[in-house]
Image (cartoon, rainbow, N blue to C red; front, top):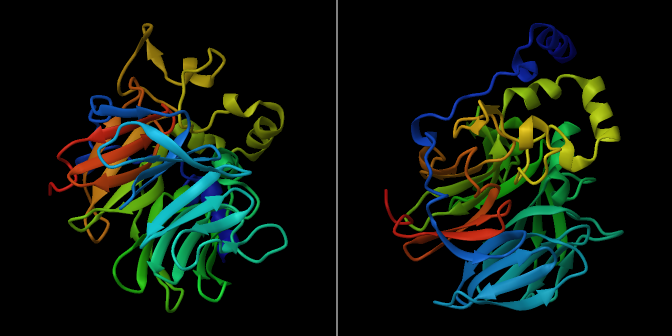
Length: 363
């Protein structure tokens, strides 16, 4: 029956074969809050913001950086053989996900512990991390064959190889909680055995019961590709996004022959696919990634890249959002972190950390 339903949906253009895209409305109404925010620092490829008692940590490629309390200058803490793809802070600990090499623990009682890597069972390509407790780490893996940096390829390949893992830091063991996810890229705790998990290519957020492995949808039909989730101090969460969806990409995903030829024959920067940043080359599709009218790019233009962070309540219902629209520059906001009353946003596409003052504790 499932195969028959999929065949009918493809013929009629409905279900997963539909190319319609929800609009940005209500709590997701577009604004320019990210473009007008203070630029805290400029770091090429900045990602993975984590606030700890030792300061604000972030990554840039394979380099781990730190900003001290009240400081705007950063220092290099460590470098790794491959790109840092995920990070999380615990009590005296920092968990670091390394592309193709799994997860390493720095500091605390489990300092030096390594999970995954060549020949080892575990998540080799982490996309997000969260400490469940002092001895347990949760890990999402977008795909078991595409590194986190290749998220665009996984989307255009219609990947369904993501997973959720639980790591026992004391025993050094791993267990898989969920599999067959369409790019699991974010995870957040709720204070119980239920956690929230983003499934990017299905444009939704799941609630997962760790004790049973069962999941249910709590937020769906999103107009963008959800990425990481970070906790808000006064309850609730910050949900970041790779980019927004558009009908042209949705259409290409239904045209397998065209899509496969594009992946095989066209250089990746020139794919008609979402991106963290755009306008870098005149050869990009859609006139430098955005559609222009009378030679002018409108804020509401169709775009490949976008900046979007949403604040959600404890049940993952969006409350408000911060945007960098098609004509803005602060795109690819895939990581956030609170420090006091301030929200820090890593605009990876722009290579900047943004600081939004007096927003973290507002309702």
